[in-house]
Image 1 (cartoon, one colour):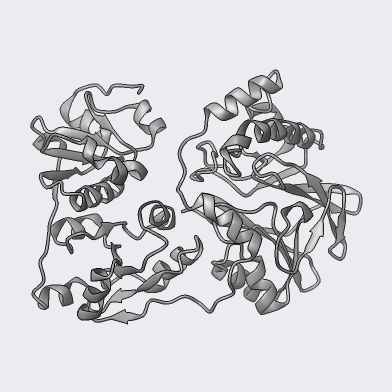
Image 2 (tube, rainbow, N blue to C red):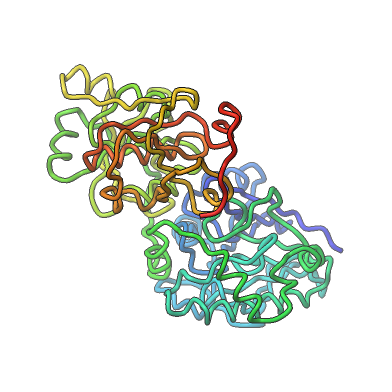
Length: 452
């Protein structure tokens, strides 16, 4: 098997991998890169590479593609499925088309399922298949979800996904598998540390490849589908039309008066500080979304995309990271950040709020609201806990008719986001549990319940 100089570019927050292939002649191919091109460009700069080709396996729903940005700024050639009908300049490719990369070649394999126009790219060295960029088709231990194009096509696409995985399984066992979606992705990647694999390993271990019939495959795949952020339903269309080309995003400074004026006109405040800081003091009505690797997903789940957002951050937090995380999911609506942060807000004499943090041993019969994903809740939760997923809290806040309430997740970050949404909806006697269900069980000596 020929060796290929491939660099995975992992986005731990979105649970995705892009890839850079050094073509050995001063040029590179990149696959499934987002508009947050910082890591891609740094690798290219370090190696002295021109980003000559950008291939997209499908119309991404969970991030804005960076291909058009590269084409505009660096003259990169975009390679994508002709069936995607992208509305900007690109090389439209069909099944079995090949692209000469200068020694290496890409062969297009139509693999619909995750999306209707999905393709995989088989990388060949001469006549030898080396690896295959499978996007959201065959992934490590599974296959990506099929309900993002339209709900009424979910089963149809699941059956196409079955055929696509069968096609990929016909490749030689030693062929490397380089998927885009991995653990942590809301595109239905199963948990696990490995982000790449081989055809042989997947044939031996992937339960979907071992399904004994198409119907069994469809039942297993559709049975694994959880919820996903609402922006997933918009970004495929944006990526088809072509994301806007922009300068590096940044947060402009807003004085307190300007921020308050925007809030009065319907803007929302997103507080990105760590949970303990938000708990101690925050602006009433602010949404708590701590800045961490998964910030983008929860921003896209909890904050509106169609009204201005005002950021409030801590002094040690990087404003560029906030701006880039928002940009990669198409949130171009950041109006700016409060200059001077919370200290400036307090100095101006405006009202403040706080939220209690409690340890397991301090709980005393309060209603418990568990806001984790359904699969997490089913795996083990406090006896009698109410379950509402975080993404549904704002719409279902009126279902909580009893207080006091302790809100919980796995560590506290998502729970504080839920508490901030409940506070906004008028709930007042709220607390957030520090830690998760396993911490509670260890401290109390009680058993968790399972199932839903």
